[in-house]
Length: 226
Image (cartoon, rainbow, N blue to C red; front, top):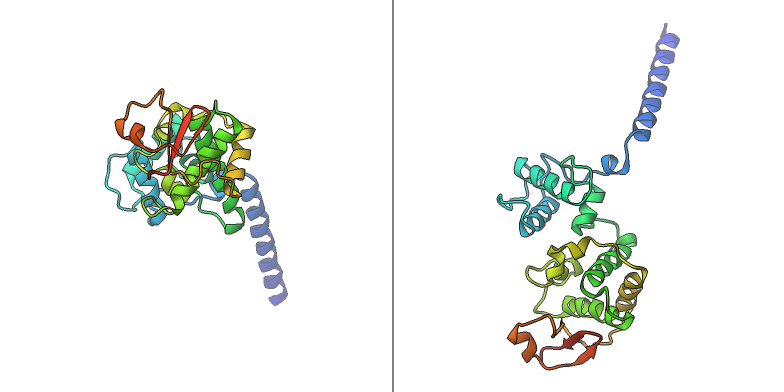
């Protein structure tokens, strides 16, 4: 009798393992690696709410609680960006928002991807050295006490880069922008330590025009601000 019971239990264990494998096969990366969804709480949810509110998708409180308003805002964002509109902030949705909660081994590549997108949005038509220069400005801001101390913080800082909220942000990123991002992260700074840049032909801001010119590269003027 005991042998039959042990055999029955063994069969159940094997069946459970088989069903687990089958389940994994039928779920894609977005489903398996879900980080934030309805009912979640924490810093990542706060970051999601902050960005969605900045972009006009979310009008609730930034409280770190993934409720109905947050879910609906995520769905709106997903529809706008061609993602599966399920209201779940999985890896693909988070990447589109520029949120990367990853291990340190892949963090550098994620930062290169984010910086390349910013370079593409701000300097797509500029010469290669001009693209590197825009990347260098972002990195100089990360080090500067007047700006956020993370790359995503600098790039998504309110009012810092208008392209983040424009259609340019979602355009394809060319290989030169990825190379420029990597070059900037490797230390190339053709701007001489600048923390500002602007196109004088497109900017009417008097304060920007009053900045001392540290370098002029392509269509952009760069300045250290002093």
